[in-house]
Amino acid sequence: MPHSFWLKAVGAAAAVTLAASVAAHAAPPPEPTAAESAAAVVTLRYDDSRAGGWEAAITAGVASWNQNVANVRLVEAAPGTRAEIQIVATSGWPQATLGPVRPGGLVRVELGSQAVAQGYDKTRIAAHELGHSLGLPDTKPGPCSQLMSGSSPGISCRNAVPNATERARVDSTYANGLTSLTPADGRMLVDAP
Image (cartoon, rainbow, N blue to C red; front, side):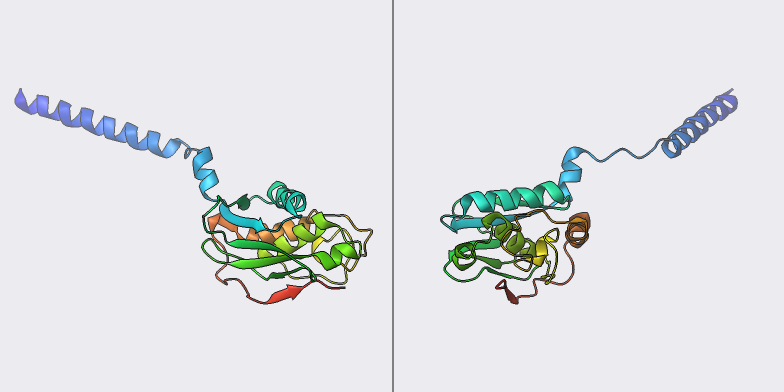
């Protein structure tokens, strides 16, 4: 009797193990949670506390990038915290450090009033210079539809939205929560006509 009891117990255990194995292989992997998906997005902080007069343009430029790319998010740094993107107002031509900036890195954006005095759009300037921080070089000369064409389309151009190629390049750079292996280029790109 003990021998047949043992065989039944072993047989039942084998059946349970087999059923669990089949169920584990048949079930699809769970979808990532919202928190897990959000963890893949690279968050970069900006400090515009020294960019007086440019607040609305910066807010609109940041919103343009945040609405058009999926893998990186720009957020305003809390007072007293370190920011990867330092934004300042200057009297010269707009210019910025060519990125891509990584979390913990540092780039500088200078929003120059000289361009505004000549009639260039503040929001386009802010969005364009932030594009440099995200690793995009100038594409001059270029049409107004290319945000990174900068001043080349003239003062009538008000487009502050990256085109499909510019969006794809930024998303590729920050894909899977990782930035490219190459740190910020470090060159300052001056956006004078």
